[in-house]
Length: 96
Image (cartoon, rainbow, N blue to C red):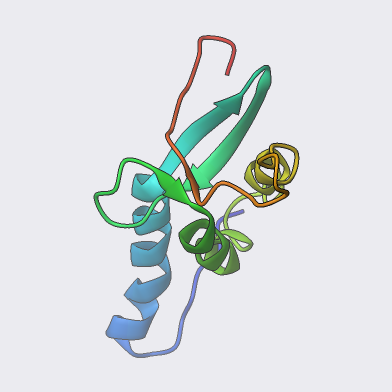
């Protein structure tokens, strides 16, 4: 069942739907090996940045069930010095 907000103020009533549309437009599929994930990019950036993605999760928690897959990709792909990639380019092979 979709979430509806009814505050009595049309501007606030439309905010949730506008946020849902923005998140859907910002969503991309990420892949690392055989693992696929849903990530959120900022603006017109082609890559998914870790900080931007984490910020979008606050809203995505109300709209999508997949909140961990992209974070799992980051956590399971550290650089040799232990640091994490700042961003991933959205690569979606056929298996995703």
